[in-house]
Length: 286
Image (cartoon, rainbow, N blue to C red; front, top):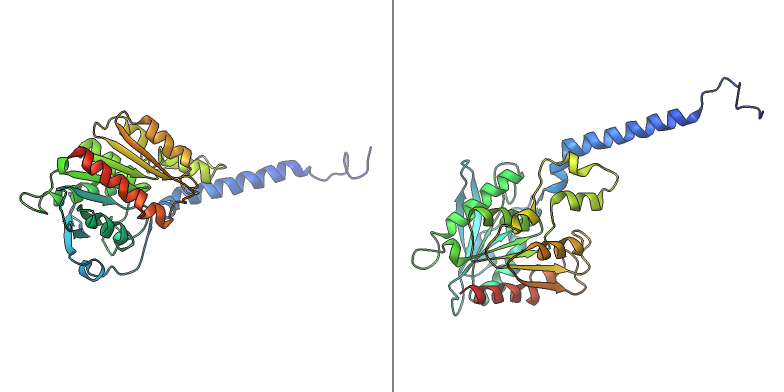
């Protein structure tokens, strides 16, 4: 018998190591549960300037949600030949509407009117973001478009919903309740838990999540034409998830893979392939 093992009176280290590992995991799980929305929603603290200072001809508007919040938004009218279609832009999980100004300018130059807005808790807006809250915010944006633009405004059948990443989940849910003319999903995930499992494979993400965002389930029920745009080197939302969303759509109009683009690369955010996908869908639904 080797000295220092059997009969030494010292506790075996394995139970202690196991107990420490379990304690660490429980602490991590508790932190993720308590602070998960701080990991999901990353609003910019920067002030948002007046619309006209950023985009010529744009104007500030205020959205009112069903739960009584007032949210800042910008309406950017079409320039040149008006295609008669508006684009409702639902942001991703970070920044504010000012970061989407290059996209709005490019779309306006193509004859599309654009509504940029910030969710609750973003862009100086009141409230705290959540799945249910963002759904109310997007609904308020769609309702506001009906009072904007020429004539009687842009009804849902005159509107494309464009959502980037988390925003793709937001507009997918909105499309089930308020069907648009068409839907463009940029870097969509199948559901939030799948992204979480990709980045945190050691945590029971599906069990812990408060906000679900079931994009694939929503897309299967959407009757409007759907375009999916994604980057082939996306390190935030794996391209396989975006491809799975496209495969799930019974009304897929187009899948656009931007070669070599990562999640926030300019080519994907406001580049010609993304803008072109929106223009082609706008022409298709007219």
